[in-house]
Image (cartoon, rainbow over all chains, first blue to last red; front, side, top):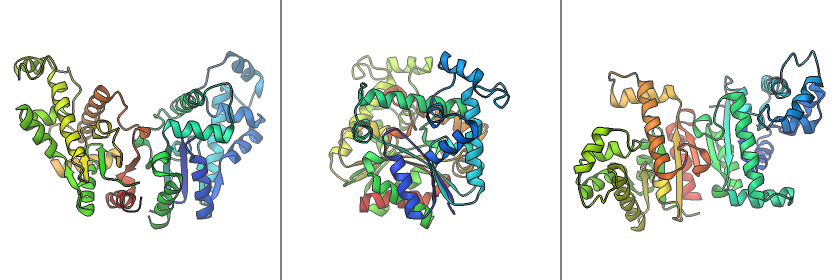
Amino acid sequence: MSIKIITISRQFGSGGRTIAKTLAQKLGYDYYDKEIIEQVAEKTGFSKEVVASKGEEAPGKSIISYGFEAQATPGIMNGMTMNDYIWSVQRKVIKDIADSGKPCVIVGRSADFILKDYDSILNVYICADKKFRAERIVKLYGENDKKPEKRLDEKDKKRAANHKHFTDLEWGYAPNYDICLNSSVLGIDKCVEIIEDLVKRG
Amino acid sequence: MSIKIITISRQFGSGGRTIAKTLAQKLGYDYYDKEIIEQVAEKTGFSKEVVASKGEEAPGKSIISYGFEAQATPGIMNGMTMNDYIWSVQRKVIKDIADSGKPCVIVGRSADFILKDYDSILNVYICADKKFRAERIVKLYGENDKKPEKRLDEKDKKRAANHKHFTDLEWGYAPNYDICLNSSVLGIDKCVEIIEDLVKRG
């Protein structure tokens, strides 16, 4: 099995992004994470912050955002909600990346689902125990008013709801991926090693 | 991380049992699968067929089985349903295996949950695409009146409901395991190799 595209879905704070970045460096693959947000922002005219947050939440949550949607980019959005519009552009960006034929690692954004008909793809899910994730987000992003456990719960719920809405699949359900690794048990380096070995040795 | 106990949860037809058996042979670990059913059958007086089937279904499904339960082993069962009684004995059998201190591979029976407080344990989940599983069960167990896809659906539902009832956890949800492998994508041999490497090299 020749793996040209690696998608990494990950729980918040699991180290999935670090694993993805290290893998891309080790394999010499292109790396897409915030680069996707930037491209979507550029194509839609929305700010990177709006694209990043809309890409993670379940649609139709906020009346304020609906008000905003109605005026955002009339004509182009063609009656779509803001989330649906961002999703459709994001989908196109991710497909273009895959179609370029250059080996790459793509973080998040339901790329596993968007590229489900592509060959030579490995879909990875990185998770970790809550304690590990809580400590990691405080270390990486600092403290805020909310307890880290609450921040994790909120983010997990948002990502799962967003994924379910657009893919009709359960986020984190093992049969939806090729390999799922618990980074707090196996270690971040070992996760990289396992995936690197799969790509190099098949 | 020194791994002395490997639990293998698996989708029906995914090759999880083959992976478990091969691993035990390669590592020189004891192997527990039907051996657990035999021990539970011996301790409870129920037939192996009853233990095997009750160990997979969600309790309280059948009025007939309830009628049977009421007369099964009065006194010992102490008001428990048949499923709960079998579960409690099975739990004890699995804990005794772990407490023996001998390295082992245990297939199914929610051993991952039962041994959740044990150290030196690796909890594995093996899944596979439906087509692969359907072909495999026909090859291994032959055809019957039901379509293989329907047999898979029924078995998946039973295992998930049983697991949920006794553990309150979602069966197949990646964060509940240490590593989840899709055998139809990675190949059965590769699944063995990845786990063997984790045990040998940590």
